Structure formats: structure tokens, C-alpha cells
Image (tube, rainbow, N blue to C red; front, side, top):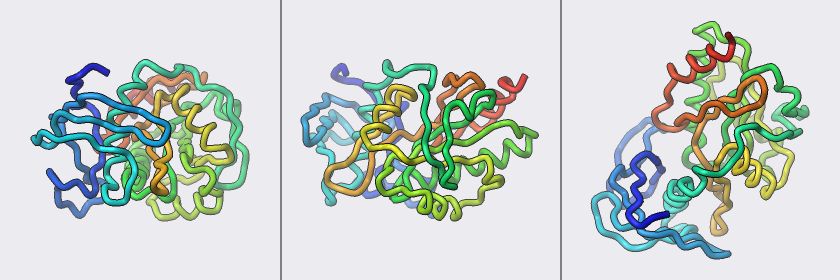
Length: 254
């Protein structure tokens, strides 16, 4: 990453940020700084340190991942490291066979012939996952209104040790899902496996925070075509391009 890299197109959550905090009752509100400039990123075995030139209009120092006193830092780390992944990953999703929230197996082969939307969440997430799941439910509502019926929604847990099928069923029950039969929340793999899977197939970061029970992960929605190729990558957190996603899905149906 070059000195002076700007992250104006990368959004990150700052639930406890000391500067630039917004007040909003909607859980989908977030905090991001379009003027943030990264100086460098230093990665070690235990931590990853982001050195900013500027954040929220202030010249600041470095911030290290982990630590309850600054819970928002893991999300800043996510935003910066996503830049490293832009050139990584494959277009064709590799074979997988995992357990969904119903306790049933779902494989890539099961999805062949059907377009599907993919994302990454976990049930104990304190920041981005609830608004992302609300957004996916809203997107599905609009998809149904537009007459789309041939699709699946696949959410990979990034905390598979904790996310049992029972916990994922309970998690999903809190959201206004128009058609739950279309959803598959997946678990049944190791943390290392999902980290590698997310990076190699979706150019997405998954990383444990060693000092908390949270997991760093991306906030995109991905569109996968009938052959298993990733053909769309969209903001799933703050400004979901609903019309664009539906148009792209309609194109796959033709």
C-alpha cells in the first residue's frame, strides 16, 4: 500500500469513535470518514497496526487492533486491509459442503443452476451484521415484489465455533424475512477454513480479533451466477444498490 492511499470508497463502523460520531436511532447508521488517509500498515503475529495521516479531519497517530478501550479499531483495520485484497481471489467459487441453519447440508453443487447472493455474518456481531441482515431482508422483499423467485441467499458464518445451526436459526428469527426458505446460514468448518475461503473466493477479509470475541469481516453482498461465478460485488451495509442488484439478477434469469 502506498503512502497517502485514500480510503474514500471504503466504509467502516466506528461505534465508539471519539470524533465525528453521529446520533441516530436507526441501527443501520454508521460512521465513516471519506477523508481518511493511510500512512502505512504494520502486520505482526499478534496485532495489525494502521498508521493514519488523517482521520476525521485530525492528524493522528497509529491504532492497534484489539483492546476493549477502543472497540471501534477492528473496523478501521478491516477497511484498510480490504485494500490489500483487491487483487486477490478467484471469480469461480470453489466446491464446498457445509451445514445450514436447519441442520441440512448445502454444497456448491446444490446451488448450480440457481443464482445466489452471498455474504458473511456471525450471530454475536455487535456492529455491522444486524444492519446487513436487515438490508438483505429488505432486498429480498423488493426482489419478491419484482417477481424474482429463482434465487438463494447464502450467509457464511465467520464465527463457526460459536455459530451452531440452533443459534443461527434463533438469530434469523429476529429479522423480517419475507421467505426464509430461500436462506441458508452456513457453518460446520474451522475458522482458518472460512478465512481462506472468503479471501480466495470473494476477495473478503475474515480475521479474529485476539483481544475480543468479535471477528473482522467484510460487509459486501456478492452475486453468484448459475455456474458458480462471482459476477457482482455490492455495498451490503450502508448504501445497498437495490435497483442495480435486482437488474443484475434479472439479467441472469434471461
